[in-house]
Image (cartoon, rainbow, N blue to C red):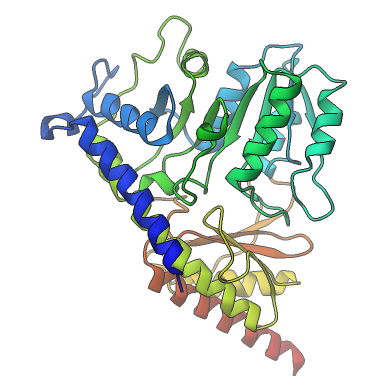
Length: 398
């Protein structure tokens, strides 16, 4: 159950977005957008202006051309880092697909001559300021990468306060380094966003938190003008800047989704709090605990075995609005070393703002429950998944 302080926080975040729309002065004629090259696309221009206003950036680049959040993040990192310079992941290893794209995939950034290094987390999985300071004292760095959410790892998600501390450490040693934050799953969860504590840019997916369950595709980068211009040149071509990029008639969905997004994030958080409490009472390790502060819309549940992961995913799938009759199977996924099982019955494929789960089949066999447009639906999904896991355990005991 949300505490009074949480209710007030959710209201402030919602009104931040409402206020931005009122200041923007959007007209009905701005919703239609363009086809083709996308010159003078009013829907796109207002959408990006709203994102910059809401997230406190100088500029925003939000385009359907970005195939995913990973695409947007990697484009920004590569645009800001030249061959011979180094990207440092300042809070441990990034999630699997991004790490693969940075370091070992064909045509990875490392293969293109860009250096890569990581600063490990502490023993509890938290950002370690001392380790980062020690690294920066001896190593020249041009780009700092920060992953806000937990990814597919046991580490807790980073809070804005931790990101603020990280920024302070970086600025103490390398004031000119660009700090780029993977903001996926974290938008509209806390009152402040990473740009407000000194990050140079945030990047992520349009079909997660800020899509509001309506955005059809795309990714974004928001932040300092210099970073946005470099990213646009990398996405399109040098000299074209950000003048291109049609919204293909989806301007209305993008804008309406953004307007609704804070409310949907609030629904996710309420539902995930129920899921955490339920699985904790069943004896499973969960992070965060029910009632604890949250920094993203991901709930980690340690199930302890591959069979339990499969049972969980299949139980959840049975109550999803699309493909409820399907039974998920683990299998290979591009960018992942381990087989992955996913439960997804979203109206927008891959939209983790809608209820879903992912789990790589590797110890400690954690499942990551994500999103949900209705708190009651998240609770129903948690009950269905728990029922499947408990029945699976009892079946093995016979």
